[in-house]
Image (cartoon, rainbow, N blue to C red; front, side):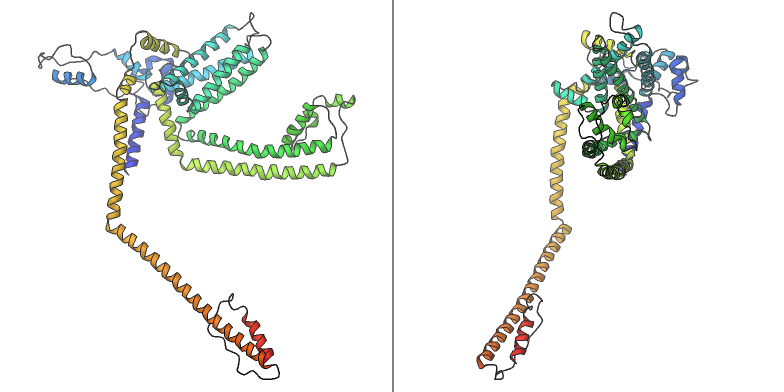
Length: 530
């Protein structure tokens, strides 16, 4: 119950941070319209929390507040405590409302989403309609704008990389902290592909290769758009499901690749006894079996020049002697791939979906937390205008040497926090040790240990009784066997014409099957001798 209450309180705090000073029930379309018409951020359109008036009746409270916040008191300690109540300087109403609207994480998130959509549209326009030849003919103006836009994205990634480990001096460890996030890996891949494409497109020899890299990079940038679904309660966990399903596909592709190679090589060798073209062999060994899964055998489509080559005698002759074996292999291959492996993949997907769906609320809360932390710590402006925030940060941190309040506060108490964490760990271990001792010394634990010992003794006693019973049975059997053998010896000594001097001994007690399996033999001997 306490855990649920804490979770509700924590989620409420995150919602308050996410919306800032605005009401939580504010419609998204109102926020979007305010981007294009800033005058709408006034009270008649967006609802804000009413700020409490900061009126302190005594100057002593001001001194306490300044001491707590680290602000020096310019008036000195001898100032009259019954002076006029202190009021901090306030901004104009429109400016304060605009700051309340613009510096909320939800506003920063929506602004970044809008500008990212615009970036993707602009990127697509450059690739499809305005991709110029290499210098000196290109690049064009639109392409230069695109390069500057990506440069602002690189600056933002550098800022995130630095702030992800501001207390870490090791560069490798700093990079490992940055690369832990999956979306940082995606950003790093997209930026790397863009740099490779940008360098290659500047030269005539690699111009087409550079354009190909930029096309692949556009796909990566577009897939990065999935990140915005993390804020949605229903779509957020689906991102986790897709990521886990991609891992399942890699295991599936391993089994599929084994069958593709096994069937492809055998099929190619049975149909064509000899083919001197290695490129054609590779396509037919892997590409044709892959199309067989979907019910296609596109020999003509796979080799575009096959008709021309067959007319000119360049196509190798096909072997018709093993057609029956090719058909059998095709049936087995389709049976395994289309029925066995595909159903295996579906079962893996179903298992992954059910496992994630069971804890979808927990996954979504973690995703929401990470998203709120990201947009709470990043600048309010979206790329490419974020370069203004980066210039401001560079001037404050590097040129003016103004330390960050958050980093300074965290770094100041870092050693104290480590000591406190160590002390808490030691106290936890001591507490658990004391609790274990108390629990062991309690009457219930003593009774449990006593009952366990009694159960062990009873078990040993039952085993000893079983051993005694088996030993007694074995002794009776040995007595009977010795009596029977002595009777047989006496009877044989008298000869077969005389009657036995005494009757055969009778069996006594019950015996196990394994130990009495020779009794019928002795009885048959007795009957013959009698």
